[in-house]
Length: 221
Image (cartoon, rainbow, N blue to C red):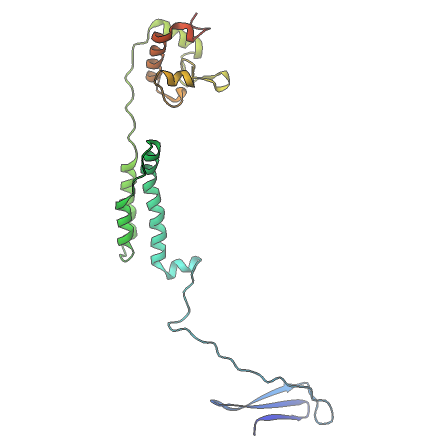
């Protein structure tokens, strides 16, 4: 049957000839024969999807990308570990007013880990070790000092001898109820109420020797 449109009965037959497959028949129901209108037929177009070589293209993002691209997963994990390992050294440098050091050892681990199946485990362990070593050591506890009787009486009056006491709406802190400015003037740092008791005793002795009992107008009288 040559290519063309044939009507008859209650259907219309469309004959198309494709170069590679020969004539094909497409039957459309719902059209009347020669005695009535046949309507119009829109030729069907056969399209073929182009296939990429190697199958479906890998996803660029999302959970599937982690499974398809192990290198991306390693790089993301190692970047997070690198930031965590470098944070203590950067914080110490900023506090000291110095330029933050570059974590060269961790960068080397990242650079050499992408092709090694055991790289994530080894890098994680090495960076944990580097993180522990980067932590500043705790300062040694100050040795207890002999507190004179008059300072013991002041401490008992001010705070009941409690090194963590806070009074005056937060302005006066610690065993001797130091104001923060006064505390710093005698060499203290941080919160007086958080300092070890021996450190508070030492700073109170310095303050008493320098200014006398007038620094405690109520309890020092």
